[in-house]
Amino acid sequence: MSDKVVITCALNGVLTDPSRHPVPYTPEDMAQSTKEAYDAGAAIVHLHLRDQNMGRMPVWDPDLAQEAVDQIKERCPDIIINFTTGILGDDISGPAGVLEQVKPEMAAMNSGSLNYLKVRSNGDWAWPPLLFDNPVEKIEKFLAVMDENDIHPECECFDTGIVRSLSLFRKNGLLTPPFTVSLVQGVESGMPARPEFLPLVVDEIPDGAPWQSIVIGRDEVWPVHRKTAEMGGNLRVGVEDTFYLPDGEKVDGNGRLIEEMATLAREIGREPATPDEARELLFEA
Image (cartoon, rainbow, N blue to C red; front, side):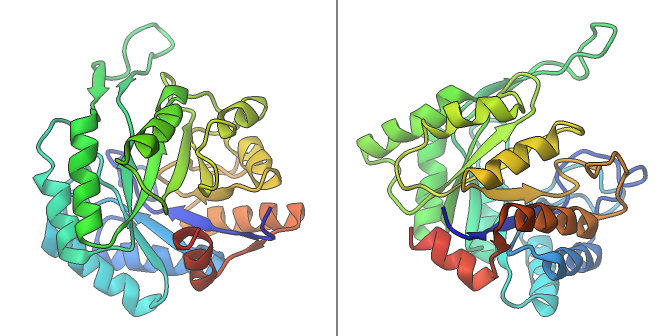
């Protein structure tokens, strides 16, 4: 286990209402929030783009992406940029255009499909059931774009079968090192966010691949991250994933969440990696 841990700030996510939650969506606010996270120990920032009217809906605007990255890099020149690529359907021209414009060092590579479900307390669907579709053909297209633009794939896995598929991709030659693995836990129809479940899933990760936990939720978030740090994994937190500290306090931005994560890491005996240390740990693995 490395005594260094790579901390990612999940800066803003998608769909949550900025009028109700501290979600930055303008380039200026994204840059300021990134600086707060960077100062607290984040080496990577994971970005989504939102419409510039109310910030409620996702957009794929290469010019907006470039403006956001330019402002972030002005404040944090060495931070690693990681862009989302999550999109429904087989048309990947939107996220591909963003990747080709800004050429981030990393990008999410959603590694399998999931019925994305949530049920309210009365039994009604929280949203109409949808399929987050990521068939092999779509994955191949994204990996080709990443390879052409020298972008490191971050393999996001929402369920155990998706984690196991990575070894099949590797045997087939579709996926070649270096790549990182993200275990997305807490989506109601995906992997559970339970510390005792984590060792079983980690055992299915391809040998030698760096990994991190992405934990969606509230009270369940922090025990899983503590177990992740103890097991040698990397860490991600931000208002995309949770709005709450371990004591239940609601945060006003990303800085407090990253501060708490850095404190947790140090309690385990691990120090947050700098961006250059993160590059060595992830890209040269």
